[in-house]
Image (cartoon, rainbow, N blue to C red; front, side):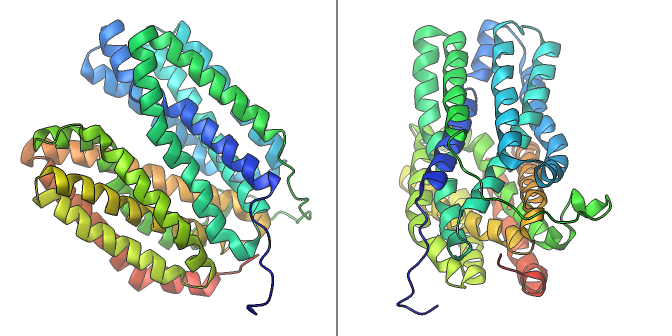
Length: 393
């Protein structure tokens, strides 16, 4: 690009509203994450094995919807589908006021998870539509900050609300945040898409086959993230770190700072360098995190791991989106999120299995090895596959 050429604007009304709605959707969900186990065990008297069933049913619902959500987003009006899915996702919060048995809670979270899967894919796809292609990496980097900020703020809001007013107040806050999110979506003006003749129904309409190398690579990375999400606070207590929950604050800071530069590097043609750097960073820091046990290393590793995920996620999103025309972006994002969800689930299960036998240090070493597998897969398969199929539109 000629240095005198003016870069297309990124921070317009549409992009800002996309970020706001995504933030509000995620904070509506994440305020329930730290309080749901407390509510189930303390107020409903449900034992831990059943608590796990209730919590995991949400992920199962999300996974069931992911492959179909991309197809639906590519078939129908993305904005109206986003509003519908967001509204249904929000409506299911009402069910927590009366669902007091394990079966009802499992069904409630299963169905809410399916609409969460559709909401996130449609929202992400609309955002890609409104971001100029020349600034796609930068835009997706900033857009992804919405979920990091939500994950950092939500526990603070949730724990304080639950302690003072109970779980019903947490549910009301979820409803309020999601209602504001739906209102925000109304102000998004989606660019008009040219009608494209759709090929006959096939597997590629649900799973983007040419992005399978990227999906496998990203799944390996998400395994490590799933381990961190589920067991890092317990690991902190195990190695004697006070206030281990602040891990996520340090990690969010690392993510936020890294996104200030990673997107521009990706848009400047350095997508492979950014992705390789991210995976290398995660390999080293997860190994250090697993073997050096003190508070300084614990929180420093949180920051650097955040940098690794922060620069890696926009690069991986572009690996999926840049290989398809606009009428397949929904399928691309559905495949991206399917890989993410599978990795998260495998990471949680693997960490639980390994930690029960050899401890959490061994689990995080396994996470480092998973990222090493991602790097090897990227170098021998994903990189060349992307170069064959990329089309920046």
